[in-house]
View 1 (cartoon, rainbow, N blue to C red):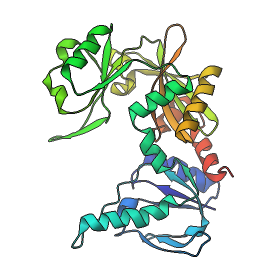
View 2 (cartoon, rainbow, N blue to C red; view 1 turned 180 degrees about the horizontal axis):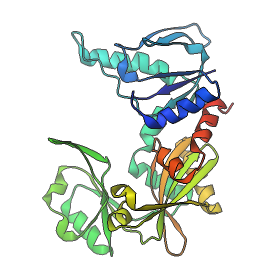
View 3 (cartoon, helix red, strand yellow; view 1 turned 90 degrees about the vertical axis):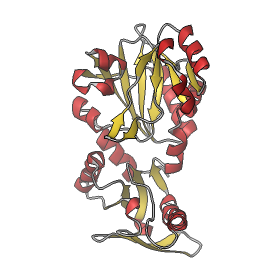
Length: 311
Protein backbone atom coordinates (compact mmCIF):
# COMPACT_ATOMS: atom_id res chain seq x y z
CA UNK A 1 0.00 0.00 0.00
CA UNK A 2 1.26 3.45 -0.92
CA UNK A 3 -0.02 6.74 0.51
CA UNK A 4 -0.24 9.57 -1.99
CA UNK A 5 0.53 12.98 -0.43
CA UNK A 6 -0.55 15.93 -2.56
CA UNK A 7 0.96 19.20 -1.42
CA UNK A 8 3.40 21.96 -2.29
CA UNK A 9 7.13 21.59 -1.97
CA UNK A 10 7.29 23.58 1.27
CA UNK A 11 4.66 22.26 3.69
CA UNK A 12 5.88 21.63 7.26
CA UNK A 13 2.51 20.15 8.26
CA UNK A 14 2.65 17.53 5.51
CA UNK A 15 6.27 16.87 6.47
CA UNK A 16 5.10 15.70 9.90
CA UNK A 17 2.82 13.08 8.36
CA UNK A 18 5.36 11.98 5.74
CA UNK A 19 8.00 11.54 8.46
CA UNK A 20 5.60 9.44 10.53
CA UNK A 21 4.69 7.30 7.51
CA UNK A 22 8.38 6.72 6.83
CA UNK A 23 8.90 5.80 10.49
CA UNK A 24 6.18 3.17 10.11
CA UNK A 25 7.81 2.00 6.85
CA UNK A 26 4.75 2.87 4.80
CA UNK A 27 5.59 3.77 1.17
CA UNK A 28 4.85 7.40 0.32
CA UNK A 29 4.60 9.17 -3.02
CA UNK A 30 4.58 12.94 -2.63
CA UNK A 31 3.94 15.37 -5.45
CA UNK A 32 2.34 18.69 -6.25
CA UNK A 33 -0.31 18.53 -9.01
CA UNK A 34 0.79 22.04 -9.97
CA UNK A 35 3.98 20.43 -11.33
CA UNK A 36 2.01 18.57 -14.03
CA UNK A 37 3.04 18.18 -16.80
CA UNK A 38 6.52 19.72 -16.41
CA UNK A 39 7.79 17.73 -13.41
CA UNK A 40 5.09 15.06 -13.09
CA UNK A 41 4.21 12.53 -15.79
CA UNK A 42 1.41 10.00 -15.94
CA UNK A 43 0.41 6.97 -18.01
CA UNK A 44 -2.73 5.07 -17.03
CA UNK A 45 -4.94 2.50 -18.72
CA UNK A 46 -8.42 1.29 -17.85
CA UNK A 47 -9.43 -2.30 -18.61
CA UNK A 48 -12.69 -2.55 -16.71
CA UNK A 49 -11.26 -3.30 -13.26
CA UNK A 50 -9.63 -0.06 -12.19
CA UNK A 51 -6.83 2.10 -13.50
CA UNK A 52 -3.35 0.68 -13.97
CA UNK A 53 -0.20 2.58 -14.80
CA UNK A 54 2.13 5.00 -13.06
CA UNK A 55 2.82 8.49 -11.79
CA UNK A 56 6.39 9.72 -12.12
CA UNK A 57 8.46 12.62 -10.85
CA UNK A 58 12.18 13.18 -11.58
CA UNK A 59 12.97 11.20 -8.43
CA UNK A 60 10.22 8.62 -7.93
CA UNK A 61 7.68 6.45 -9.74
CA UNK A 62 4.59 4.90 -8.20
CA UNK A 63 2.32 2.14 -9.48
CA UNK A 64 -1.23 3.53 -9.52
CA UNK A 65 -2.55 0.14 -8.47
CA UNK A 66 -0.56 0.40 -5.23
CA UNK A 67 -2.07 3.76 -4.20
CA UNK A 68 -4.79 3.09 -1.68
CA UNK A 69 -5.18 6.43 0.10
CA UNK A 70 -4.43 10.09 -0.50
CA UNK A 71 -3.78 13.03 1.82
CA UNK A 72 -4.88 16.30 0.23
CA UNK A 73 -2.93 19.02 1.99
CA UNK A 74 -1.95 22.23 0.19
CA UNK A 75 -1.31 21.40 -3.47
CA UNK A 76 -1.03 24.09 -6.09
CA UNK A 77 -3.62 24.35 -8.86
CA UNK A 78 -3.24 22.41 -12.08
CA UNK A 79 -2.46 25.04 -14.71
CA UNK A 80 -0.67 24.72 -18.05
CA UNK A 81 0.95 27.94 -19.21
CA UNK A 82 2.79 26.66 -22.29
CA UNK A 83 1.74 25.62 -25.78
CA UNK A 84 -0.60 27.26 -28.29
CA UNK A 85 -3.81 26.93 -26.20
CA UNK A 86 -2.99 27.06 -22.46
CA UNK A 87 -6.62 27.42 -21.29
CA UNK A 88 -7.68 24.32 -23.23
CA UNK A 89 -4.56 22.46 -22.08
CA UNK A 90 -5.32 23.36 -18.46
CA UNK A 91 -8.87 22.04 -18.79
CA UNK A 92 -7.56 18.83 -20.33
CA UNK A 93 -4.93 18.44 -17.58
CA UNK A 94 -7.56 18.88 -14.88
CA UNK A 95 -9.89 16.42 -16.55
CA UNK A 96 -7.24 13.79 -17.24
CA UNK A 97 -4.51 14.03 -14.61
CA UNK A 98 -6.88 15.50 -12.02
CA UNK A 99 -9.47 12.87 -12.81
CA UNK A 100 -7.00 10.04 -12.24
CA UNK A 101 -6.13 11.48 -8.84
CA UNK A 102 -9.81 11.71 -7.93
CA UNK A 103 -10.12 7.99 -8.66
CA UNK A 104 -7.97 7.11 -5.63
CA UNK A 105 -10.27 4.97 -3.44
CA UNK A 106 -9.78 6.75 -0.10
CA UNK A 107 -9.15 10.41 0.71
CA UNK A 108 -8.47 12.50 3.77
CA UNK A 109 -10.45 14.56 2.66
CA UNK A 110 -11.82 14.16 -0.86
CA UNK A 111 -11.12 17.43 -2.73
CA UNK A 112 -14.70 17.75 -3.96
CA UNK A 113 -16.11 17.38 -0.44
CA UNK A 114 -13.61 19.93 0.84
CA UNK A 115 -14.59 22.49 -1.78
CA UNK A 116 -18.24 22.16 -0.78
CA UNK A 117 -17.54 22.30 2.97
CA UNK A 118 -15.31 25.39 2.73
CA UNK A 119 -18.33 27.64 2.08
CA UNK A 120 -19.25 29.33 5.36
CA UNK A 121 -22.99 29.52 4.55
CA UNK A 122 -22.94 25.76 3.94
CA UNK A 123 -21.11 25.14 7.24
CA UNK A 124 -23.49 27.20 9.35
CA UNK A 125 -26.61 25.61 7.89
CA UNK A 126 -25.15 22.11 8.29
CA UNK A 127 -24.03 22.84 11.87
CA UNK A 128 -27.49 24.03 12.86
CA UNK A 129 -29.11 20.97 11.29
CA UNK A 130 -26.71 18.77 13.26
CA UNK A 131 -27.80 20.40 16.52
CA UNK A 132 -24.93 22.81 17.25
CA UNK A 133 -25.49 26.32 18.59
CA UNK A 134 -24.68 28.91 15.90
CA UNK A 135 -24.44 32.73 15.92
CA UNK A 136 -26.76 35.05 14.00
CA UNK A 137 -25.08 35.83 10.69
CA UNK A 138 -25.70 38.16 7.76
CA UNK A 139 -24.25 37.79 4.27
CA UNK A 140 -24.90 40.91 2.22
CA UNK A 141 -23.69 43.34 -0.41
CA UNK A 142 -26.14 46.03 0.77
CA UNK A 143 -24.82 48.72 3.16
CA UNK A 144 -28.27 49.47 4.62
CA UNK A 145 -28.89 45.81 5.43
CA UNK A 146 -25.47 45.65 7.09
CA UNK A 147 -26.12 48.77 9.19
CA UNK A 148 -29.51 47.44 10.34
CA UNK A 149 -28.02 44.10 11.33
CA UNK A 150 -25.15 45.69 13.25
CA UNK A 151 -27.52 48.11 15.03
CA UNK A 152 -29.83 45.29 16.19
CA UNK A 153 -27.15 43.44 18.16
CA UNK A 154 -25.00 44.50 21.14
CA UNK A 155 -21.75 43.66 19.30
CA UNK A 156 -21.00 42.42 15.80
CA UNK A 157 -17.86 41.24 14.02
CA UNK A 158 -16.89 41.26 10.38
CA UNK A 159 -15.29 38.09 9.00
CA UNK A 160 -13.72 37.59 5.61
CA UNK A 161 -14.63 34.58 3.50
CA UNK A 162 -10.99 34.48 2.35
CA UNK A 163 -8.32 35.08 4.97
CA UNK A 164 -5.75 36.70 2.71
CA UNK A 165 -5.82 39.39 0.04
CA UNK A 166 -3.16 40.31 -2.49
CA UNK A 167 -2.03 43.92 -2.56
CA UNK A 168 0.82 45.89 -4.08
CA UNK A 169 3.02 45.09 -1.08
CA UNK A 170 2.27 41.37 -1.09
CA UNK A 171 -0.25 39.25 0.83
CA UNK A 172 -2.19 40.73 3.71
CA UNK A 173 -4.09 38.73 6.32
CA UNK A 174 -7.64 39.83 7.17
CA UNK A 175 -8.53 39.25 10.81
CA UNK A 176 -11.94 39.21 12.44
CA UNK A 177 -12.81 42.72 13.65
CA UNK A 178 -15.52 44.44 15.66
CA UNK A 179 -17.72 46.79 13.63
CA UNK A 180 -20.27 49.53 14.34
CA UNK A 181 -22.91 51.02 12.00
CA UNK A 182 -20.61 54.01 11.46
CA UNK A 183 -17.90 51.71 10.08
CA UNK A 184 -20.08 50.58 7.18
CA UNK A 185 -19.92 52.57 3.93
CA UNK A 186 -20.80 52.02 0.29
CA UNK A 187 -17.69 49.87 -0.14
CA UNK A 188 -19.89 46.99 1.02
CA UNK A 189 -21.48 47.03 -2.46
CA UNK A 190 -18.28 45.79 -4.09
CA UNK A 191 -18.68 42.17 -2.98
CA UNK A 192 -20.31 39.83 -0.44
CA UNK A 193 -19.57 40.46 3.24
CA UNK A 194 -20.18 38.40 6.36
CA UNK A 195 -21.31 40.07 9.60
CA UNK A 196 -21.81 37.92 12.67
CA UNK A 197 -23.12 38.26 16.19
CA UNK A 198 -20.30 38.57 18.72
CA UNK A 199 -20.33 35.68 21.19
CA UNK A 200 -19.36 36.56 24.77
CA UNK A 201 -16.88 33.84 25.64
CA UNK A 202 -14.57 32.55 28.33
CA UNK A 203 -12.25 30.99 25.78
CA UNK A 204 -12.24 29.35 22.34
CA UNK A 205 -11.80 25.74 21.30
CA UNK A 206 -9.87 24.46 18.31
CA UNK A 207 -11.35 21.02 17.78
CA UNK A 208 -9.48 18.73 15.39
CA UNK A 209 -11.41 15.64 14.31
CA UNK A 210 -9.80 12.69 12.53
CA UNK A 211 -12.30 9.97 11.79
CA UNK A 212 -13.93 9.23 15.14
CA UNK A 213 -11.09 10.71 17.22
CA UNK A 214 -11.53 14.15 18.79
CA UNK A 215 -8.69 16.44 19.87
CA UNK A 216 -9.83 19.60 21.65
CA UNK A 217 -7.49 22.44 22.61
CA UNK A 218 -8.63 25.38 24.73
CA UNK A 219 -7.29 28.72 23.50
CA UNK A 220 -7.47 31.63 25.94
CA UNK A 221 -6.50 35.01 24.55
CA UNK A 222 -4.42 37.19 26.90
CA UNK A 223 -4.50 40.33 24.73
CA UNK A 224 -7.28 42.39 23.21
CA UNK A 225 -6.30 41.29 19.69
CA UNK A 226 -6.17 37.61 20.66
CA UNK A 227 -9.59 37.78 22.32
CA UNK A 228 -11.13 39.11 19.12
CA UNK A 229 -9.20 36.78 16.79
CA UNK A 230 -6.51 34.53 18.26
CA UNK A 231 -4.75 34.41 14.87
CA UNK A 232 -3.86 38.10 15.33
CA UNK A 233 -1.58 37.46 18.35
CA UNK A 234 -0.33 33.90 18.73
CA UNK A 235 2.13 34.95 21.44
CA UNK A 236 -0.78 35.94 23.70
CA UNK A 237 -2.57 32.56 23.59
CA UNK A 238 -2.67 30.21 26.56
CA UNK A 239 -3.23 26.56 25.58
CA UNK A 240 -4.77 23.65 27.46
CA UNK A 241 -6.28 20.28 26.55
CA UNK A 242 -10.08 20.24 26.85
CA UNK A 243 -12.85 17.64 27.05
CA UNK A 244 -15.62 17.60 24.46
CA UNK A 245 -19.17 17.53 25.90
CA UNK A 246 -21.18 14.49 24.83
CA UNK A 247 -23.86 16.54 23.07
CA UNK A 248 -21.24 18.46 21.09
CA UNK A 249 -19.49 15.24 20.13
CA UNK A 250 -22.76 13.77 18.81
CA UNK A 251 -23.59 16.92 16.86
CA UNK A 252 -20.09 17.21 15.36
CA UNK A 253 -20.22 13.56 14.31
CA UNK A 254 -23.53 14.22 12.55
CA UNK A 255 -22.16 17.41 10.96
CA UNK A 256 -19.09 15.74 9.49
CA UNK A 257 -21.10 12.74 8.31
CA UNK A 258 -23.49 15.11 6.54
CA UNK A 259 -20.58 16.89 4.85
CA UNK A 260 -18.80 13.57 4.13
CA UNK A 261 -15.61 14.73 5.85
CA UNK A 262 -13.13 12.51 7.69
CA UNK A 263 -10.99 15.40 8.90
CA UNK A 264 -11.85 18.89 10.10
CA UNK A 265 -10.36 21.69 12.18
CA UNK A 266 -13.27 23.44 13.89
CA UNK A 267 -13.53 26.60 15.97
CA UNK A 268 -15.95 27.10 18.85
CA UNK A 269 -16.57 29.94 21.30
CA UNK A 270 -17.39 28.73 24.82
CA UNK A 271 -19.80 30.99 26.68
CA UNK A 272 -19.42 31.72 30.41
CA UNK A 273 -22.20 29.17 31.10
CA UNK A 274 -20.14 26.48 29.32
CA UNK A 275 -22.18 26.27 26.12
CA UNK A 276 -20.19 25.67 22.93
CA UNK A 277 -21.08 27.84 19.94
CA UNK A 278 -19.95 26.74 16.49
CA UNK A 279 -18.02 29.44 14.60
CA UNK A 280 -16.57 27.77 11.53
CA UNK A 281 -14.89 24.73 10.05
CA UNK A 282 -11.84 24.18 7.89
CA UNK A 283 -11.75 20.83 6.06
CA UNK A 284 -8.01 21.33 5.52
CA UNK A 285 -7.10 23.32 8.62
CA UNK A 286 -3.73 23.60 10.30
CA UNK A 287 -3.09 21.32 13.26
CA UNK A 288 0.69 21.03 13.62
CA UNK A 289 0.99 23.96 16.03
CA UNK A 290 -1.81 22.55 18.20
CA UNK A 291 0.06 19.26 18.58
CA UNK A 292 3.26 21.18 19.37
CA UNK A 293 1.57 23.30 22.07
CA UNK A 294 -0.59 20.61 23.68
CA UNK A 295 0.97 17.23 22.89
CA UNK A 296 -2.30 15.96 21.37
CA UNK A 297 -1.39 13.05 19.03
CA UNK A 298 -3.00 14.42 15.88
CA UNK A 299 -0.17 13.34 13.58
CA UNK A 300 -0.50 9.74 14.70
CA UNK A 301 -4.27 9.82 14.20
CA UNK A 302 -3.90 11.14 10.64
CA UNK A 303 -1.29 8.51 9.88
CA UNK A 304 -3.57 5.82 11.31
CA UNK A 305 -6.43 7.06 9.12
CA UNK A 306 -4.30 6.99 5.97
CA UNK A 307 -2.91 3.51 6.62
CA UNK A 308 -6.14 1.86 7.82
CA UNK A 309 -8.86 3.36 5.61
CA UNK A 310 -12.43 2.12 6.12
CA UNK A 311 -13.56 -0.86 4.07
